[in-house]
Length: 402
Image 1 (cartoon, one colour):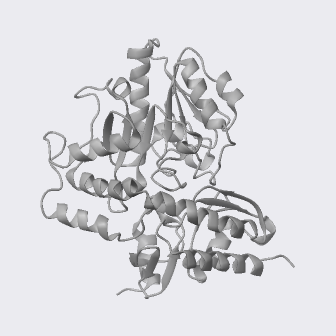
Image 2 (cartoon, helix red, strand yellow):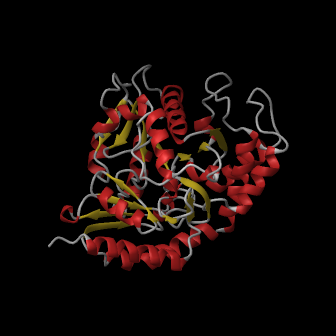
């Protein structure tokens, strides 16, 4: 087997440089542990940005995938297949909604919701043609398409990709007054993350989501919750919106929905919203394919047991005091088994901290220069979590200035 250095050199030569990964080359993984091509083991504290909520190689999910692979994978939506009805029915029930539109990636789910919100605005709310506005949040991250990065305020995501799609209005996150001022007669939807993941696990203050829900009801606009990272157990609830008892008009789901086996996303809403689509108005060759539905159905088994949600809540309570005691940390934002940790610049950059952690057998990811994101698989053993946080404390102590 080629060495890590050889693999990395080949990637650097032949793959576009749109990522700057840590210098580890994974070969196999089980649970919360990754083994590289040299046989070194690492504890995964990233979970592929919450796509691995249920860990690597979960036996129930692998069994579902293997069984389906032997029978049927894809017929496209030109025909029915025998896995889609059950998956959609169960996901609709989990969300308390009437209809499910399966797609592949999270960005596709967001793009689908944008189209649905605009058509709903024209056909149901009565907005004048071509004038629909969707209000989004500062600091948002919803994907990488040109439409989506067009309403981002991250210069790195936007630079060189214009011109951008009109029809979006950005307001401050966690500011109800700013949102109220940003809604008018052309507004059709508010699109937000209940917790902003890419921004560094930014958690709005208590009461914010409930206030947004009330405001959307008063102004007659849809509330679209992007739960692609925050949903499906990560925050200790099935959906992050549940922490405030909020039910959005539209759920956007992805990442963990595919069980870390293949891309699977979904837009979930009532018939009064998703019913604005008709045959030919939207589609996807792979969306809702038989293999994805089989794996998604197995994911729903795990969620309906309540065990992943309970584990995230319990482990989140366990690590919170440990996070608060870390040296060289200026802020900790934590909900469930998800945290953003801001590192004092005197201790180095977040990437430098992640590189030092990697050298000690722990994998995490930096964002926005000074923040380390932590999102372990929800199946991580408590002792392993404690050990990883101990190593993080060692790294930061070793980087202390002076």
